[in-house]
Length: 231
Image (cartoon, rainbow, N blue to C red; front, top):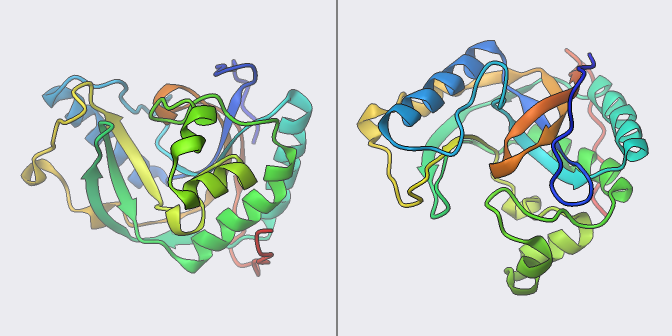
């Protein structure tokens, strides 16, 4: 399914985010929790049913219009061969950058999907994204990043790969970066356990938000999933 979108630019080219979109119930819970967070403290963004969209990121990259079309074609093929993925909600956590996130348990199926997406799309990308979701200039950050993150940035243009892949939904970003959410005010992380059925190519805005959905791709109900290794 294709959606008409107005591109939000970061740097010279639009930044695209390949994501899994949560099914309806988990998506609604994400929006509700994001809004609850915003009621208790000032935030940079609030998730909504019409954007910014709740999502689980797999890969981020700059694409030209032609590269974006090629990426969509490859994602269409990958989704047709990838079974739906069941994910277990694990825990909530905030970080020093003010991001408040729900983390899922990593699974072989999810890791395999990320590997397939990156193996297909990383060769298409143009250069390096200007900034990452927390606002670091990547051309500068990679000079001081930990070795594994630096290697991933140089090879794929994206650092959260392999050991650094921690699947999550970002609920919001607090303006006071050190703000902590009261655990008693949170639903159980297991309430977000769900079967993910939709891969999507989105436009990425500030703070790692998905501002527009370019195209969605339904995962297959019962199909074998190929697993080529990353180069």
